Length: 196
Image (tube, rainbow, N blue to C red):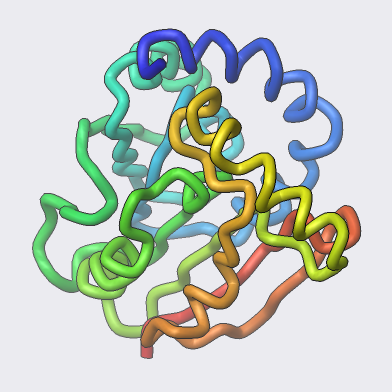
């Protein structure tokens, strides 16, 4: 599925990106500055939005997604360096980044707790971490529907867990949550954290 998912992603998700998600991403990334690490950059949909970063280092484990990101790298106003790597094993020194961005990616990370530990490790003290994620919904029927659909969905969508409670995972980490904003009845959240 890794080879075909970028094509499916572009066909299914990009129409949403042009309307529903772009505003959320733009507001989130407007706050981003300094040396930035983007986790799971995918096809590079965030790249043209960065304005205040000195540089963005973008990690992506799927080389096919990285190939599709080339066009968005060209559209970026800031330097983008793309690296094939996993969030659970970041190839960077401690205290390297001013900001970390993760958008619609924590649902796919096999070990999200380890990824959060790695994010904390590579952030400088006082760094900001910005998440934009879909999460397990609080409404019981919809939450149950997410549970039922997740096994199939994971196979089709490159390991995406519809039922992952990313906010709870962040709560369990050492990151300090500063702000949480909810969209579409709690399906999507933006979470702003800091490393103290």
